[in-house]
Figure (cartoon, rainbow, N blue to C red):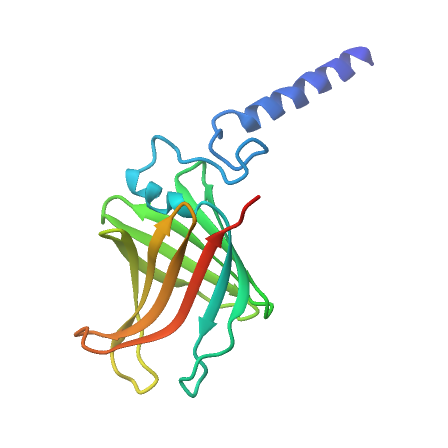
Length: 192
């Protein structure tokens, strides 16, 4: 009986050590938002100033094109997949929950961002592609306007620094001549 107990303890302790080895960049007690993997593409660091939790003000358009009242939201960014990708989570006061998984695709040199939300659960997640443009991160997805005009959804992270960041969602025509902002978010890093 003692032999079985000893073997069981050895087996379980080896599983714990195995499950922790090689994944040192995952979120942990010591690093609650994970860490950038030094072997990841350097572009994974594009979101570094956003890693952590921010308190934000969210402002989006009504169908009549006026702006809704400002909502408070929390936006959390963390490293996942052993520090080779970014996950974010959003909680808004109106009980909208959302999140994205962000991976940098080295072969094409672009970010691939998949968006998920609740209560509006999409059959397929929205996918945006983009890159850093100067100090901003700009992502695009093909999207027709309500009138059928061809265009793109453009999402831009800007004013990124250790104190927070700003974000804007816009619909733009394919020729770039018409730009319609539909959502704005202003975030400040939460002081823990």
